[in-house]
Image (cartoon, rainbow, N blue to C red):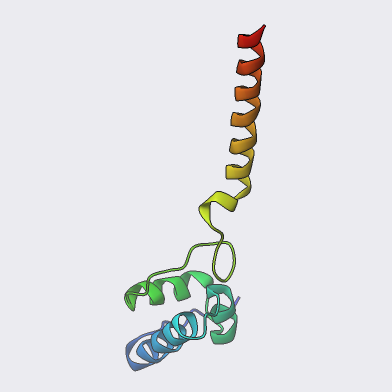
Length: 92
């Protein structure tokens, strides 16, 4: 394993600005920026936090609407099934 090289001073400022521009303006992922800079995912995340960047939701470039997540779809199906059972039981 190689030696740990700290990112400080002007170099840190330069990398922070690079990842900020990549994330905010070019819509690149944290993982892609980590690979481009040769830094860890965690460090890129920290640099974005230092730059006060609001992180996007997980799930792709623009995320999914809340109602389209698999768990939300499954919840709707379960509720509909319970409602159908209750209606069938009430009419019996």
